[in-house]
Length: 384
Image 1 (cartoon, helix red, strand yellow):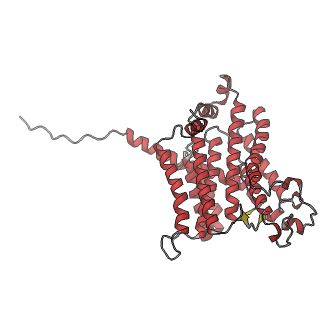
Image 2 (spheres, rainbow, N blue to C red):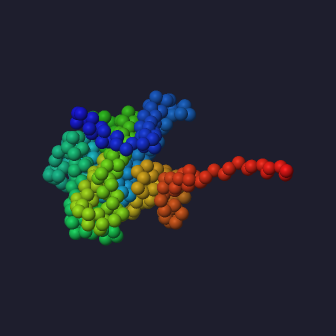
Image 3 (cartoon, one colour):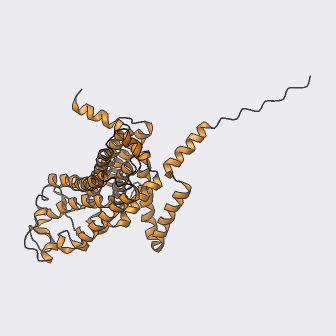
């Protein structure tokens, strides 16, 4: 058997009917929405406007991010309140590449330095910006930087057997520290304004309809591949160990498993997935700034997973799309009360749908199937 076939077999492991339907929907949306934008004229009722393509593309990136959180929280019991940091680092890596592509077309027409560096009187490009003029280098950094940070944090935390709320506090402290660092102008990442005014990606205009459609399909494809990867992991022997760690870590350790190694692997992989989501997010929204490191952002991401149903894979995707769609609508309709609505949603889900939307639907379906059907009424026998 060829190596490519083995990899394909691993990704397709345990893919049931529900998973196939989910993949068909994601890939169908990834093809249909750009097609309705490019091929259907604006006056047609089936035309999808450009802003809707970018908006739904952003939702797909958030769905991939929620999927990465579900992998560590839903199946390994690691409640990370710092995944916004991995998402933002992936976004900054892509943003640095996009800034380097501006070249002399910036406000100050400097072929080497981005405009914010010229404004701050920087004389030369910092060493950590080297290589970001090449897409392949930026693509590696999108995965390597969040993965390296997660590996270092997990190495020290898991070896020290830091778990539960203490680990959550550490991850939140990490993203808050990065927030403060990236706000500083002398860090070389644009300070409060961040990175913006992008022109090209791989030689194509970022704002062009064709580029926007390609980025949308890339987001849908990344979500589908992320789902396949997570599904393959949880259906493998590795996934069974992860669930055992979630349910009884001490007992799993007593059986001889190196729990810290499993947790470190899945935590690092999850951070890499979050970095990819951030990289796809930036060119579609046109900006990346330190607000993405905000602890409130990371908490909101956990709410997406809780609303959809953690430990289900499909649930977090649904939760991310529903909550962000609600955010888009309510921030325009009732902007002063959106945060109250979000908090109320989380409380309501915790009290009435502790397993989330997908978990509740699954339970209801099982109860319906187990309920015996009532026999037809039998007419009484006539008196003899």
